[in-house]
Length: 113
Length: 109
Image 1 (cartoon, rainbow over the protein chains, first blue to last red):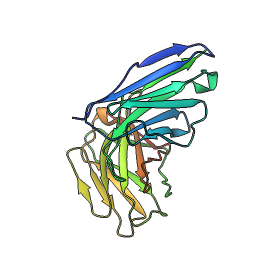
Image 2 (image 1 turned 180 degrees about the vertical axis):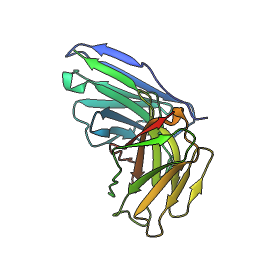
Image 3 (image 1 turned 90 degrees about the vertical axis):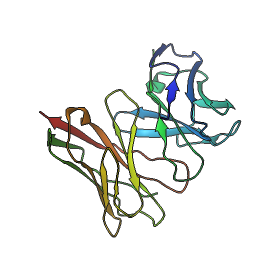
């Protein structure tokens, strides 16, 4: 079975803090994704990566950066957390190719005070 | 990108088939239809996907109309654990999934 894990299920941070969310997958997938999910807005893509050290902006990259130094690990960074970044963050991975299924992690619920 | 339309909520009696509809009238010929579900406070779980033929796996069946403008996800014998939000997604040619707001399915004892 595909396993995608995220470093924390719940996180509380203060405004202005630097926040790291980490995602690890164990299926040697080329592609990895970060989404955020908010009530009434569905899932929105923040960034994705199709290879080590490669990244592409999604629909809402502002305020975020990412890092992919190893194939299995994809980090989402909030350089200076703000209250409007309070959300559920979901990581996903897939094999390369346009129609490969994405597999999701359990999510990290981030609260920024 | 093709968009999808789903009813916001549905109920289904336990043990009966749950039929979840989805409209995707602007779908392109090479775009697949995917279904995921999300149980409260968990990550989305893949269910099934298809292009134009009907598909079945251990979780569900997917029926796609001949013109591909709509589809139906069928859970043959719904259980209480099937209570979740179900997302119908039409995948574009890139790597992105566009999740809408889905259908909240409640299975009633």
